[in-house]
Image 1: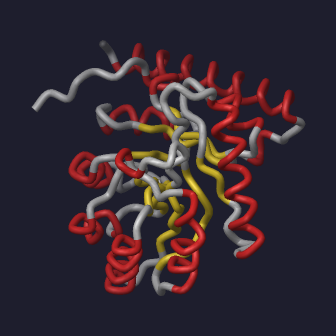
Image 2 (image 1 turned 90 degrees about the vertical axis):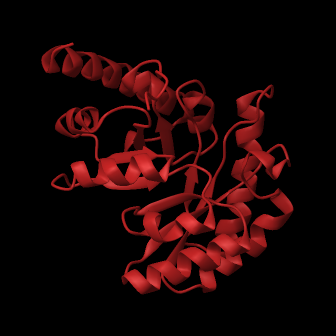
Length: 234
């Protein structure tokens, strides 16, 4: 596939996504400016990130450190905000803090400590979101709803990190709108205690509209922008 053909493909995907966002915003009585579109580029090459940037996309999400760190280096000349959205082991905190502007997947106290220490060491401030397990099962990543307040307090008190808000994935088998309504309630409780924590990272290619209807501020979209994912060739 030529670069021109790929650019046209991505441009078409972006136009469709933007049209869907605009329609959902109208239905919810919201302004498009309230939403940040994060292009999730996992399994896709840095050349796709360059094409997205040329089309005006400024926020890029990755969920594997090894892939992300290489892609960030290849795109170092671009003015992008990098979001780490995958489950994060504490031993990867130093690497991720080196490039990520926002970490969406903070789900336990040890990770708060690790990110804080590495951010201070690097002289950076990282925005962190508390990932919520809306099905109450932290096995797939995320803190139980009952543990969110304590994690928020820990992030708010830790140096080098800034409490940004919440993130969640709609549980498998549940109607996304119901799940995101619960996330909205959790986010409101957090915002009451920490007024600056106003981010709700929710909604992917298949459930953007439900997320927008329930107050999402950040959408994490991959497939609808870049096409069906292909297995990584190692």
